[in-house]
Image (cartoon, rainbow, N blue to C red; front, side, top):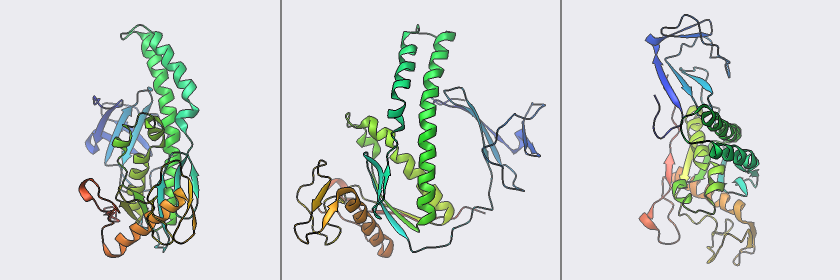
Length: 295
């Protein structure tokens, strides 16, 4: 079955429709097990409850196995906490001062993608074999980009969850940001929404806390040292000095430190973080409680 909104065909099998034995998976009405290259072995003694077989637009087949992993347990608690500021020049800036480079995966494959799209455009419209082949070639480039993005995000989110008890992020509305035509491609390549999704489910698995600070909170305009708000802070200003206390700031590091402070205030007392100016809806910071996986 294929959703109109998705480029992946998939079919789901429950326990009565497959057999898993000796590390081999056999679906209903099949006499031989599927030839699968496992990304990692299933936990010993664990039986799958659901199997999903899917094919992406690039023609690649995947098998996803749902099971309860008793080995996934909350990590030892730590006092470490980090604020995260999302950006484009740097994918993420941490309150520790660390800046994580934006790999710009789409930009690296832009020429390859453009060639494949030109080849597709030259093919006659319809369902002919040549056009289908050209379409798969475009899809393979998109899949290559998506795979590299996903791998990068997995590494970053795993490290953040492993090293910190509390991670504070901005509650960015990516859908609205994508309306900016000049920045839409760069924002899509940064995949902030996928970063947040990964961060939150890993935090639930490992007993960590993710706090999302209201997107209207002026993290860039506040001095993280004395709290004095700045009147103007255009995006072109990447470093500035507070006129009240004289402390010099890197714009993104300062924002990450303010995000952390706002999130810790929420974590400590549940108080909302109000913007320093009137905003649509007057929304406050939200708190994501750590959840344990069901046994």
